[in-house]
Amino acid sequence: MLGVLCEVLTNHSRKGSYMGEKVEVFQSDVALKREHVKVAFASLVGTAIEWYDFFLYGTAAALVFNKLFFPQFDPNVGTIVAFATFGIGFVARPIGGLVFGHFGDRIGRKTMLYLTLLIMGLGTTLVGALPSYQTIGIWAPILLVACRLVQGFALGGEWGGAVLMAVEHAPANRRGFYGSWPQLGVPAGLVLGTVVFGIFSRYPEEQFLRWAWRIPFLLSVVLVGVGMFIRMRIAESPAFERIKAAKREARMPIFEAITKHPKNLLLAMGVRFAENGLFYVYATFVFAYATNILKVPRPMILTAVTIAAAIEAATISMFGLLSDKIGRRPVYMFGAIFSGLWAFPFFWIMGYKDPLLMTLGVTLGLAVGHAAMYGPQASFLSEMFSARVRYSGASLGYQFASIFAGALTPMVSMSLLTWYGGVFWPVAIYMMVLAAITVVSLYFATETHKLTIEETYSLEAETST
Image 1 (tube, one colour):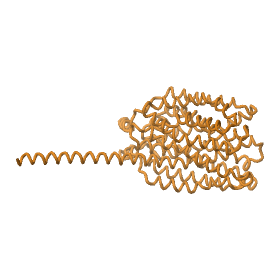
Image 2 (tube, helix red, strand yellow; image 1 turned 180 degrees about the vertical axis):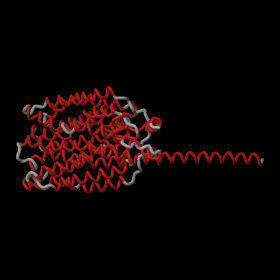
Image 3 (tube, one colour; image 1 turned 90 degrees about the vertical axis):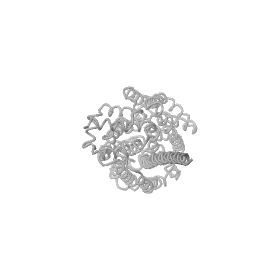
Image 4 (cartoon, one colour; image 1 turned 90 degrees about the horizontal axis):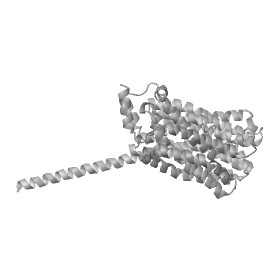
């Protein structure tokens, strides 16, 4: 009897121990999932603030800067010049990618995210405080360009750090989903920027041009404070921590990224042409096209873009999640092909000048075509490079493409409209060319969604010993 009792008690103890282990594992999984969400959310908030700052300039370039900083030109020419200063920010982005990528691979991702947010906030706030051409003459556009360079430099380092924090913290089968969270910062920043700018654009023209347009830029100070508080509460990337613990940081990560991943650098640039270039058709050029060519009211096109960007904020993660299931390339390819096919219908719909149809046109361009490319992009580009040089490699591919795609698109599109007397078909063909470059690049790219961060790290450790 005593033996039976002891056996029962022993079995009960084992069962209790087993149940305790299951509870501990469950609690550990829940805590880990919370950490994934917290990091992804922090990346989203910080990136949204940075893109809010960046997009404000694009909106103001289409609606304000030609009148305040380039009044000596014809309105259309002044808009082209204003878009040229908008493009200058893209020239600084690869420099930011080089600088922040180097130190992000050397000393960590997290520290770089503090610096990029602070620098972006400084550049944006200064734009809101600049005197106009009428007050200080030629110094007004010079200082405007300087502020734009500061914005571009900061954004050049922001994207790589934000997406790597999300991707490298994420489980292997959810990198597309969690990596899409900082990508949501683009439509979120666009929504925030257009909403705030739209509120102040309702003032009478004289008040709007005198002071109201400045308020959205000055509000950047508050948003940066919020972003800094949130980012201070997240941990460093585990992939980088393993590299650091093994003392395998790259001495010259930029050089190593170029020499060891030359093909992927070129392909990373190529796959961005449609995504980056066409986005600025829908988010920047469309303001000038609608107000200058179609002669629709500012609030109408601002509302259309705001609604479209809000819808895209939902579809980006859907496409990111889908890329975890069927792969990055098929989802990305769908977005590129759709975007190329949508070029002509987009302008046909816009030509009706109907608020609902204009909203539909921009929404399909952003929430379907662009979102299908942008959703899996963070994980796709990150997975192209080894952990030692991932910040530098992903940033270089992403930011260098922006010079040839996003930077030129508003200016080229407006120039085509001016040269061809306001007809849209040259711009539509230009959009199709951008889509074709991305399709070809995707054809030669390798699928990456089944590769884990740990496997990348192990292979790298083996080949570098």
